Each structure stands twice: as structure tokens, then as C-alpha cells.
Image (cartoon, rainbow, N blue to C red; front, side, top):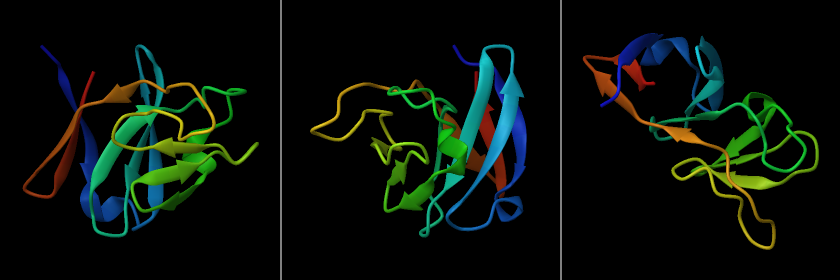
Length: 102
């Protein structure tokens, strides 16, 4: 079972933006898509460890800023032909407040 921590209000993260949350298990990037979906991944690309929080968000994907690997925001999986995975975390929004499951 997850413990839930408050990230902040959904309005605190701009559309196509990210907020980094420090947790006991490391830094987690919380993403907001253009259609207000919220996702959370370990802020570490599976390729060379680039900060996904600094990548460009498009659809439900983020492009790593180091080598342009595309990572699925829902699963953390790299898109083909690349292979690898960044750990994904559960998130939920209640009354406009983002909660992160750690």
C-alpha cells in the first residue's frame, strides 16, 4: 500500500510542465500534460541517467534532454527502438491537489 504525499495544486505545475519532488527513494518528476493528466516517474532516464524533469513533454511522452530518448509517462518504458524503464509512481488528484504515492 502506498503512502501519499502532497505535491501541491495542479495549477502549480504549468501545462507541459514538471515539478521535482524529493522523496526517501530519490527525486521524482511529476508531469502535467497539455490535457491536464498527471504522471510521476523517477527523475532518471534509463539510458544515461538524464533528468527527465528537464525534457520536453508531448502527448503522454517525455523526451530526455540528453539523448532524446522518448519515455512513456504512463509506464516509464522507453519507446522503440530504445529499451529501458524509469520507475513510475501512482498519482491522484483530489479537489485540485496532486498526491504522489511513495
